[in-house]
Length: 266
Image 1 (cartoon, rainbow, N blue to C red):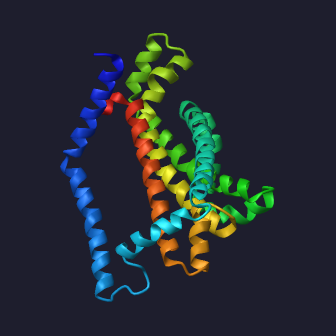
Image 2 (cartoon, helix red, strand yellow):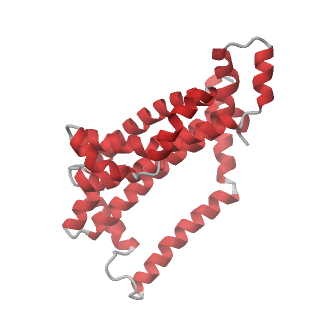
Image 3 (cartoon, rainbow, N blue to C red):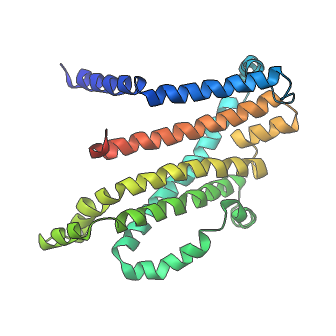
């Protein structure tokens, strides 16, 4: 058996085991129940404004074929992953530096604690004045939304590392670089990926709100434009698209986390 076929076989085994998992089918049942209740509520007249799942399914192809639908996915995704990527890079560097230096943490952490409770959208007026374009404004807001969850989680991860591991590494003559690679990062990875998963969800929330407020494209703008033109199918499609985008992003984060931490696989 070749390496490629062996890898494909292992991947199939993993996915087939997930498909046999009761959790998968319970989740599928929950989604089906939600849409069934929605349809029944429409039939008996409890929901007269929102289209039923059947009506939505009939109208989705037309909405999807409209010019710009898939481009809106691309525009929102670009903003999310640009802001998220910059935030992750800076948060990891600063978080590790603060975790390894109590003096640096004492100097910087109070400032972050003042800035952290400020909602990302509260930065919008200042961001509009500071950045020369709405695109940079929205990327900045997604950066703010992602930065603090990642930073705090990596700090928590470093704090949870058993001091005996650090002492053992130092007793063996480990350098600071080796300490970072062999002790700090592996020990902080579980908390880091928790922060990344939380942050990617927050960035989608922030970018959608920013697009509704000041954007001219993207999934948030598409949803708001559907509201302005009284297209209920467009509104619901926009909301479902946003939900699917966030779910897919979180799934990617979990998949990357499994690859980065093979020792935690079940």
